[in-house]
Length: 283
Image (cartoon, rainbow, N blue to C red; front, side, top):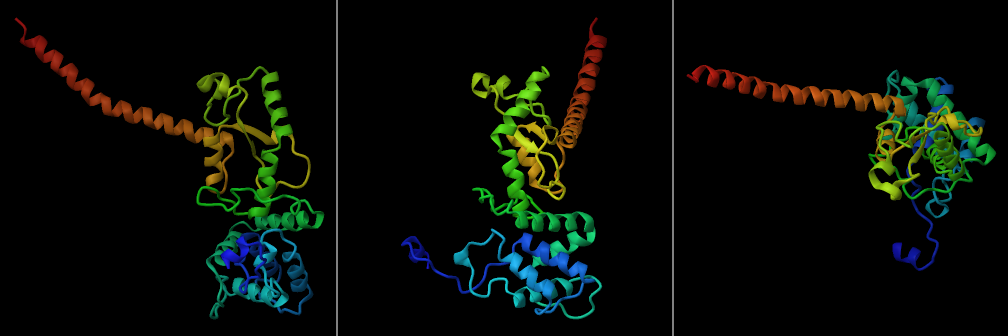
């Protein structure tokens, strides 16, 4: 199959792709609205979700077969989720680990996850999310955690990479006479790299994904941070703000200083005792 694709042929898949987090979020929200019960394929709401899932720009057309996210498949997924609910007494259907993970996120943070589902639906309805092309690092690894799914993350990163907004944010900082340094760790690219680092710093959108609507991004919603801190912030949800990360860094530095002092204190005491002993021995 791989060589046929390389030769330019379109090869339709036999098995549909696994459900992505975004898709499961929408299905889980449907199950929650239905009192954590599975739904029938003939239900109008299931049919509506089926049509919506087929619009999500997540899976390539060549990876979908004729039954891709049809009402039967959507209905089956609602039972996969419903039968994993802690209150369910029967035997669970064949679901995946991601079904369980998203379910527990809804149970732990129902308002946030509901807002996430609404934002995904809204973004598809307006075309906002469909217009954003996938990025090279969209396949999030262990170092990129996006519990709200790849579509909202795609919009989040598009805002961070908006060159116009980044320039305006940098200009606003310099206009106030402030240093162009990381708001979390204080790293200054120009201070370390000279002219090569002048004017360089990354931009981070501090509004959580489940809150970021389609409105225009304000400069107050952006933070200037170094690449290391940016990566660390995105590493695990919930994402800390630059101020929260700065506090973590300061606590770590203080702990390191105390540890260093504790290591050197016995040596200092021993040196002082040795000096006293030498002094006592002198005639």
